[in-house]
View 1 (cartoon, rainbow, N blue to C red):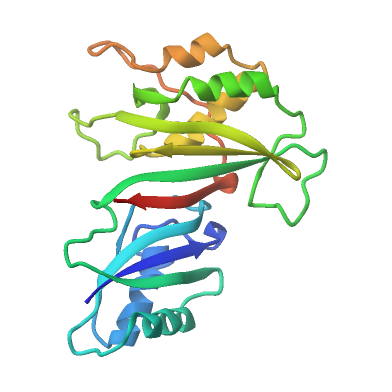
View 2: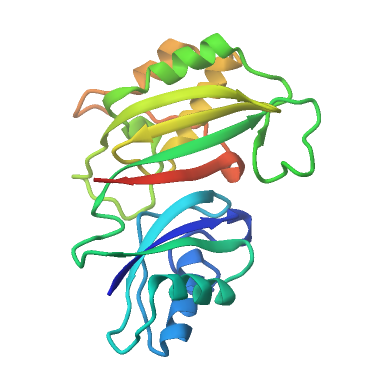
Length: 252
């Protein structure tokens, strides 16, 4: 039985999603919990990686339950949560077809990023928002975000993991890049068919630079769709992990 897991977590407590030797990643904790329940090693596949400090309201993963177990999805839900740290919860467990894959079946993702614009950052927002007491110009922010919408080469807005190949395709399509007011600031929303490494943080940081008049909008736009064969410029304005949330993973 293949199980789809919907997950939420406070990223501050973990070393990102992907398994590492230290064992304090979200994948490590989830695999340990599932393997303890099944009494056999189980592999968990996520919809994608989130970095250390990045949060999720609805990350998605899947695992294959052994045939020897007769547990229902709701029983898996309860059992997994008894094995996980309190800052990491399984919100829902669903049985899915055997060809479902958390990563490869996904058609897109939505991320949000919170900006806190109050003079003093509340201790209850620490680690959950980027504190910008200087504020931002909403019109400039909207213009910067609008420039990201559509199909572009986002090579200028991604970081290198160190294992990329020359043939890596950096084209992605964003259907949404917008913001709305929240109690203490603004919430940015990005929806696209896929995201490159640190892409949302670089888009956010670059848009904030424009909105604070530290960078010209034309300079930001020049980093999009750079001509092939020429040296590619990259944005160096990476927003901190604090305010970033994986909001949803979309499937057909």
